Image (cartoon, rainbow, N blue to C red; front, side, top):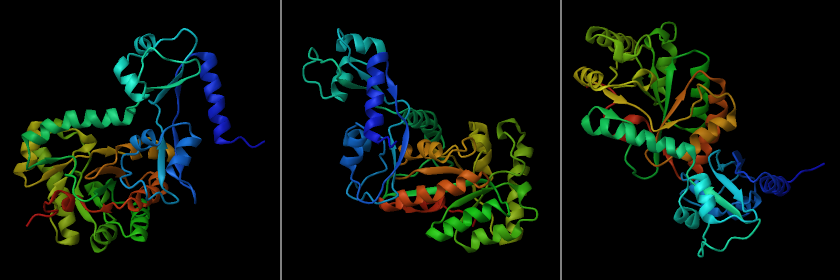
Amino acid sequence: MVITIKRVSMLCIIAMYLLGTPVYAEQVHRVATGETLSGIASSYGITVDSLLGNNQYVVNPDLIHPGLVLIIPDSSRQYYVVRPGDTLSEISQRFEVSVPILANLNDIENVDLLYVGQILLIRFQPLEREELAAVENTLSPIANRFPDTFFFRGEPDGLRVALTFDDGPDSVETNAVLDVLQRYGVPATFFLLGNNILGNADVVERLVAEGHAVANHSTTHPDLRTLTEEQLRNELLTLENAVYDITGLRTALMRPTYGFINDDVLRQVGDLGYRAIQWSVDTKDWRDIDIDQVLINTMPNLRDGSIILMHDHPSVTIEVLPEIIHSLKSQGYTFVTVDELLGVNAYKQ
């Protein structure tokens, strides 16, 4: 028996009505030949605006090519089917969303006029977007205190994003990532671990030869906040010297392990001639093994100027990377290295 998307949507609506509870929808949709935004939105029972609102990287709605990834919509988007006796005020209190917001989300002109079976969008802002806002709220003050040392995103400037990969090099996984990047003509920035360089000099050479930026992710991957000044210095300079011995280049960009940072670490990093590079989009490829879940983690947060965190060891990274690249390229985005995105030097002069 063939179950269509529309039939599934109808079953979900019936279930919502019977249970009187919100429904959560979280799916990855890969655009097929001939599909349009309006048709896709209709098949999932949502509006084009809500579809675009959950995929803000889509800046050219007319460029919806086959293979484009759309997140429809994520787990925090809630719907509710109006039951007999419901009022907007009661629904507002039940889900802790103000009446004006509910009215605005659902284009309700008269808040006293609801009908049984009406589908209400209870919440528009996805959890991942809340997470992005939390990142902004947490990291912006640090960036303001250390404007020449700490960065977590680039300024919007012509649809540019930077792919970054942590924890290499590895003869198998890093080379697999490089094969994908080479196939699509995409440069990236690789934050290397000193302990992984031994025996992988050829991988480091390939990184530089193919136009990627090599950066510092420490030697042993410790929490930098727990180190003495001498220990932190050794963590960065041991990796720096190893890269120099192979390439003749001295790294000038570093990424704090685990993203853990504080003012003392940043002052020491700056004194050593480094800029600390965080990220604005975490794919969570280190945690999730499902391709669709990694896409759900990633796509709603992508913006012009995004710095995207990935790793070059999980197998899911190799599988999901082409979809991310294709989707962004089809929307007119350009991939650049972090130093190009930020207008800084990748290497010490």
